Amino acid sequence: MTDQPPTPTRLVVLLAFDRGEDGELLPAIAICTAKDLAHRHVGVITWSRSADLVLGEFGPPVVLFQAGDVPEME
Image 1 (tube, rainbow, N blue to C red):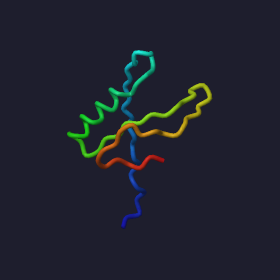
Image 2 (cartoon, rainbow, N blue to C red):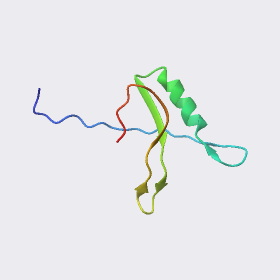
Image 3 (spheres, rainbow, N blue to C red):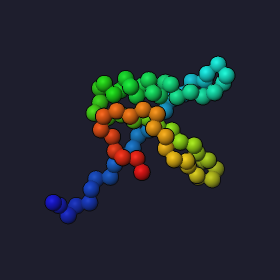
């Protein structure tokens, strides 16, 4: 056991969207890309959450796809 603090975890979010026929934003490309990356990496996750950038408020994260070893989301 060492006296050094644990190394902080860095979170990288991958999101890409397409519009459906009704104009709704769909995260299909993000999920497809994450599934492709899962075959080449130890872990992959893509997630979304609502955000009010003016107020700086964010909703809880919603996992769209996760595979392998990834840090716990807090």
